[in-house]
Length: 132
Image (cartoon, rainbow, N blue to C red; front, side, top):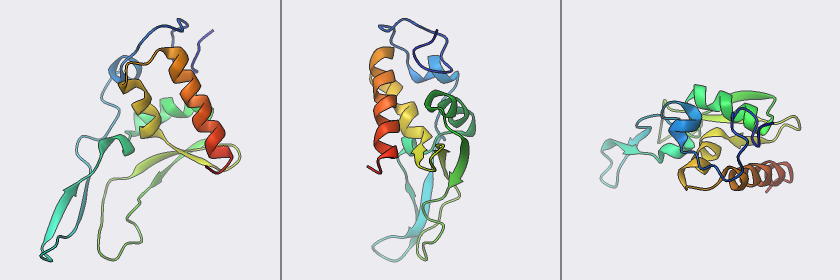
């Protein structure tokens, strides 16, 4: 039995990095937002990659958290000044709450044991379900 759904490792002390878990870089390579800078010139602003999981990584995260589905969410979709073609991959839970797949994938970047990551995933699910 696996400690974390979708990961074929039951050693609670095992430390896996994102490549070992996802098989490839789990985040988009260079997400950007485009809009005016302080001089009103249109420029692209780099975004923090960990919010932008790839669809493939989101699929595994969905398994890890027991999600019902995956939806893409563009945080700039309704913004008149800034735009982005890059989207967050959000895991929709059975109760309708959503978890950012990229943030869960980032749990594997800290050198934590699988036992600790399993606890972090459980806490994420619990906190999102409570509306935190």
